[in-house]
Amino acid sequence: MTYLESIKYQAFYCEENIWQLCQQPQYRGGQVIFIASDGDYFPMYFQKTGQGKDKLIFWDYHVVLLHQGMILDFSSELGFSTPLKYYLDLSFIDEDLLEPSLVPKFRILSDTEYVTFFQSDRRHMMSDSGWSATPPDWPLISENASNLEQFTNMRDLTFGKVFSAKGLLEYYSNLCKQAPTHQH
Image (cartoon, rainbow, N blue to C red; front, top):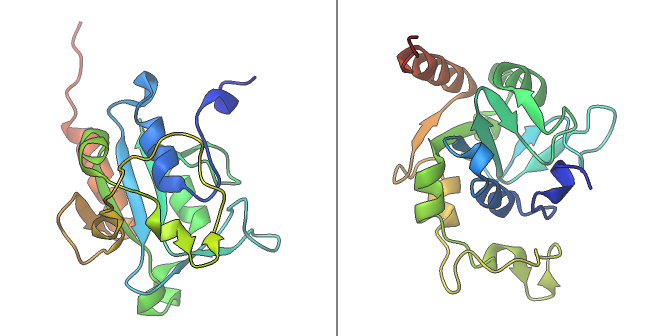
C-alpha cells in the first residue's frame, strides 16, 4: 500500500476527505479552501471525474487543502500535491471569460478552524432515491447537524476569508512574507 492509499478517501466527499486529511500530523498547519461560485456550479479542469481531454467538470463546490504552498486535491489529475499557482492556472478558466455566476471564489480558513467548526451529517448527499454517491465507511463528522452551506455560500462570512483566484494568490504571498524566519 502506498502512502496516498493509506489516507482516508471517498469519491465525491471532498469536504470529509479534507477533514480527515487535517487529522494527519504531517498536514497540520494547513489552510482549507472551499471553492464555490455565486451560482449553482463552476467549471474546473483536470478533475478525475471530468470529461474530455481537459477533464472538465462543473462542481457545485470543491474542497482542497493548501499546505506549504501546495494544493492537496484527491480529485485532481494534476497530482495530489500541486503548487498553488500552477493549480489555479491550469484548473480554472480566466474569470474574465466567465459569466459572473460561474466565477469560482475561494474561502480560506485554518485547518484548526475547519476541524473545530465544520459539521456534516451527509444530508446534502441524500435524495428520495438514496445516496447520490456511496458514503464513506468512517463515522459522520456530525450526527444531526450540517453547516456546509456556511462554507459553500460565498456571501456568508462566518468562517474564513473569501477571495478571487488572484486575491487568493496575493493573500498567500503576503502570508509567506509575514511568516517568521528561523535564525541560526
